[in-house]
Length: 163
Image 1 (tube, helix red, strand yellow):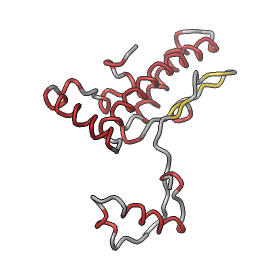
Image 2 (cartoon, rainbow, N blue to C red; image 1 turned 180 degrees about the vertical axis):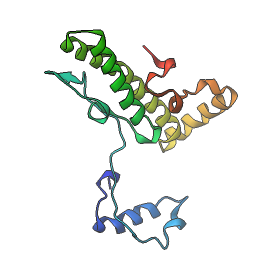
Image 3 (cartoon, one colour; image 1 turned 90 degrees about the vertical axis):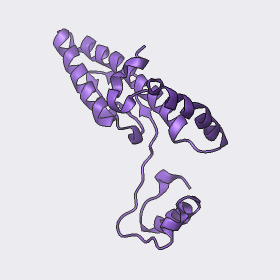
Image 4 (cartoon, rainbow, N blue to C red; image 1 turned 90 degrees about the horizontal axis):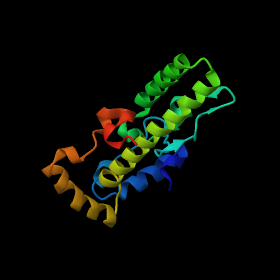
């Protein structure tokens, strides 16, 4: 069952059945019942390459989204607004300014995707390979915390990843 496919009253029973399969939390769902609507959404990274065309600039989630587990949506949206504003103020040719914005957006949006993929692979992925990865990475992170990107605080301009 795909998590983003769970919607509506008819999905509640299958959602609870799937949740019970998780050994660590199965007991939490013994007496579970729906008290409101069930909905889910995809948590991956989605983006438009070069979000400017024909005088239209895409900003925020229209230009790119990242896994909300890492909290970059609003930061990226606000950065998009500021970068587009700065580009428009810097160039009387708004077509050129729009392309300059899109080029800059592509750069920092790629930073967000790289950081979230790294964090996802260490902290969220499941399975034997992910367990082995954590067994190698977590002791190194405990030894030196600067090895981990401060993605939650740094936002889309994550300095350690700027290309």
